[in-house]
Length: 345
Image 1 (cartoon, rainbow, N blue to C red):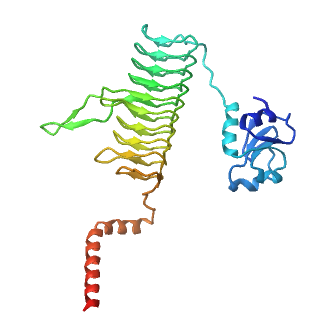
Image 2 (image 1 turned 60 degrees about the horizontal axis):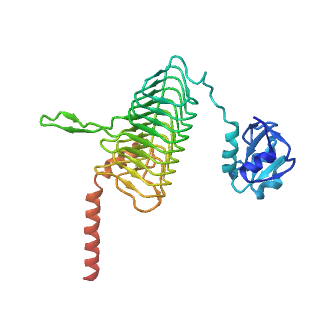
Image 3 (image 1 turned 180 degrees about the horizontal axis):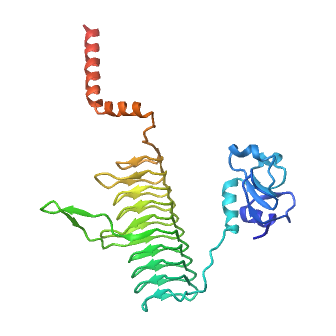
């Protein structure tokens, strides 16, 4: 890929400082970029690398332009601009031909002529594959699935029946969409009786689902992932959950069944939501890493509940003492009342 600075400036809405006809052919960090590469300064942490960078062009804010030793594109938000520019250099994995001869496609499935179907792909009954869909090797698509335009399934993705994916959604390797929700109830003998999971999964447009992530089908109604949601690797979303538009779920997030998350929420790594009743989270909530919501949140903001790590012996002593906090609280209240009454006497 080659692109001129003037073309890049048009793409990111910036202004070129230097030769607008200069060509860049790749991307690099400030510290390691070579001649011909585009870099960016998006954090003060990396500012010390700017005067010595060997990049041919750097995306910078106006305040940093004087310290840039090479051509630059001045933008309001260098990181966002770099994200947009990076799309030009993304490698597209090839697929041999529109339909590999080892693919197994049911006669009732409808597959657009422009779709690319890789080796050993299985497509079930009545499923619909729209234009420019890319399905890589060993993917399994169950019955009655719908893949809209420009969806991409990386190798070894499994879609159970009744899964719909909106346009331009990407699912990475090992993800399983539409497996049974974890629904059981004890019978008269105390044995677990399974509850049939007959709902589906609806995923909106422009969603990214990371490797080895699992999204369970609904028990009755569908599990829903709205437009623009970005999901990292190894995330678990239980049955009948709903994740609002443009929310971000980092690695190893877990949602118990029937959790509802609003739009523009962020869940840090290993955080989650669940309890003995459904959790509802309003729009605009940020949940810190390792924080688990055990009750609903109705006000936007940042929520944290992680326990700070300590040396093991000290942690063990404090953990044991935490069991007596209620007793200690009652004793303190009695002492307060005694002190107040003594002063009055």
